[in-house]
Length: 419
Ligand SMILES: Nc1ncnc2c1ncn2[C@@H]1O[C@H](COP(=O)(O)OP(=O)(O)OP(=O)(O)O)[C@@H](O)[C@H]1O
Ligand SMILES: [Mg+2]
Image (cartoon, rainbow, N blue to C red; front, side, top):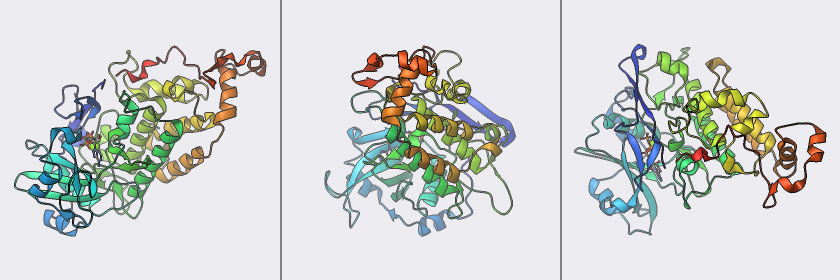
């Protein structure tokens, strides 16, 4: 599984962006089973300088300072079989602490934590680590993962989070195996709404933060599929005064970054909206943002899907076949239209995240799944025809196992997993 094609995006200055094929990137993600994940992230060397000093950040954060020994005990010496995942920063381990004292606890007691341990050789990771403490140590919202603490000891840099039992959205969308059943339509839309609320909060006056690394692996899920954003290593304070953007080095994950940001290094909240559009499209299609295992012309999800998103009928070519017939047709059309808006090449035509939240809330209300969508299936099963006559001619034999099946045009291979 795991078509692992991310690409490094880095530059010395906004005007000298360099895109490096990341197939063999040192930041290739691997999960506990040694399986590659979708993307590789750039180095953290250009995390923006924070106006606050390291001491100020650590002192003012609302999180606990752990010793290395405490975390070693909590994770049973960073046991390999407790690895939850691995990313550009390092490995993430499962551990246990006492809910009152936060002291290491026996496995299965107290509260479960996720401990992210910086790779020793990751020199630049310190800045990313500090940015995480800076932002997550201050911001609190139901759709942001909770940072419980950190450890800074000699060369050791660790972060301690609340444990998210259902792991990342990336795992649910792209991993195959009995552990990861396809996410239903309703759950996909629930996750999209939760993640959108997280971004909307970041962009609001309360936080004024640009997230800059929105992607499926950074959306974590609790036991009820509530989405929470993690990884603030690349986050950046939004523009102040009447400025429209902040100038940065180009950082992020290939396939998710907005075109104008890649071209100019000018970062705005609309850059996050674009990335959200990419993830929404991943949720609709079950395809990765970048997948070089696909046929030519389909490597880049946005480029491939864009023409289909403009037509209410053609969106069937984009929709994940694993959704079966259990989705709202009206909802799918609205979600596709929303993704298209978020992916507008001209950032001015993208909605803001508050508008995205409102649109997704409306989609949750689309309850046409059972009857209307099935009728539509029958109607379109002869080749996306729309005439009532055609619909009448179809027999109920189109149903599979008692459920209507959406036709998958041959142009859209069922092996969307391509794992
Ligand atoms: N709080 C958490 N609870 C449960 N699992 C987690 C938690 N944080 C991370 N993980 C798991 O560890 C994996 C690695 O996370 P990490 O953020 O280090 O890397 P990534 O997001 O996959 O890649 P990148 O380094 O490019 O951001 C995640 O995909 C997820 O499966
Ligand atoms: Mg991550």
